[in-house]
Image 1 (spheres, rainbow, N blue to C red):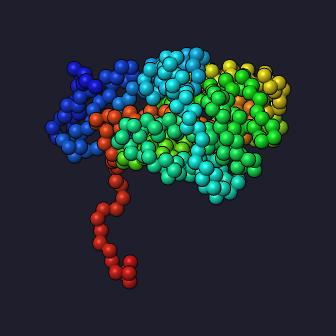
Image 2: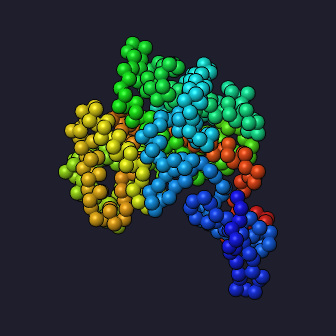
Image 3: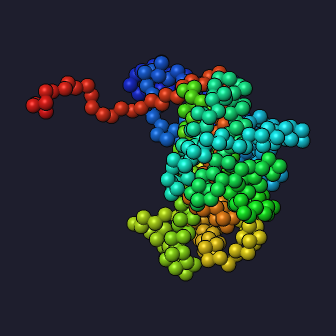
Length: 436
């Protein structure tokens, strides 16, 4: 990271001396102004709620250009990865910086496959939860508990421990999600089978029973694998920043990832696809396709509290590149399962058509996003709406680990300590209770 020849000058209208600030250039994207010495030299902080104009780190993993609608993992466009690679190849790329060759891929797949089982006592831990608990409540507990079962890979400063923890987390997340699902519906847990692919294994653990094995459908497996790839990383979002901040204290990788799971649970983050499906089901309850006009009118009404879920994105000011891929997958899955005429899916496609053509949405760039389509795909496959965010967490785990390991390897990293603009009471004295 080398500073640019151009510098920023910060001047003050109160006569305080001005200050020169270095500027760094990224390989792509905006330049950044280095303010690390600002407080030491001026006694002032910057104020940036939500950190929308602040780079908290330097990274080589994921790049987003929201205006162009571009998402790159290690420089590779998401469209190429989702079309030409599977999820474990994408995991290898995010963790190691390059796509694997055939030998590297085989070795990596074998390593992950050898860690898919979880300690048998995790079943007893799981049975302590109510069966109707939200899967994300269960997952937050299960992922955090991994550090109690696998304490031989919890030293965040040991590169070998970090590598083993990464493999364990990637391998065990599908098992934990499937266990949480089976527990919620009162079915026996299905153990992983290591001769299946990562995604085939997950779907078998989800849908097989001791009395009826799961028949692999390549279209559905590929759709789920694509969901995993598209959700694997997304730069410095809320949950990734949570994992980095948590990990900056030196806590173990399992605890840091559990913090990411907890953050992802929020409806503004990982819960968006769940919210999109709930919206569709609400419209369906009110009358379905015939009520779309009324619903759209409510969305446009400034005095209405009705929100359009699954459309638009905080970062992408153009079409979300992941949504284009999921749209294609969505139609493939509905065709494969013969669900084009299912009332809920007809409703979703009608809403999609309006949003892509109605000037109100087009002018505001409220295009369908990845959450809209991935929710429809998962529901069609048979995954309950409540489990959507847990599957998002499964996919995002590799991104969280890659970001965490990058931070630990950065010689400039420090424990996170955001500052504040304090606007509360100044120093005052405590009065005796009778005088208050």
